[in-house]
Length: 118
Length: 114
Image (spheres, rainbow over the protein chains, first blue to last red):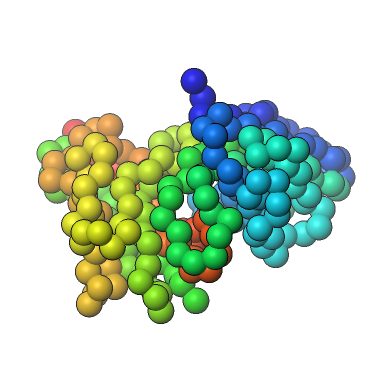
């Protein structure tokens, strides 16, 4: 029973292509996230959605477009891929997270999608 | 602005030895703090979290962390390292007024020698 699942696990593509990563969670959570982990293992949030509403949109090139068809799914589409987009992209989910204020509900992460742009 | 600093990008211990991974935070408000572990080719898994209920927090796999406000620290410890503890460990702080956004430290790779 995979709680947060991402597909594909590996994605190798050429510069200029467009690709998508899909994420699904079966935990019943209402908030989902995309994090990027670079080659030095540094993790940074990209986006978060709460009940299909965009909550967090960090300074990310507009070539990256998230889409949440329902609260159990959050996809990431990337246009015109560049070499610098190579990284591991993690999807995560939590219960809550759309409210203001401090937040203590833990995130549940998928196993990541390793994107390599050549 | 909130931030997290992990001292030491790599820590090596012998099996059975004490594990100490250091984390210092910066926050103008009482923080929510987390430790996550990442095994090779996997996602992050929650080890433990501090939410102001108790300063000594016990987590999974025998790990614990102590919140020290005076030192702005949240160091992770385990009395006796096991080979299976070898992994990357991340300290994180929840950003105030931004829902579930976490700011992560740069990570500490733990190696365990037989």
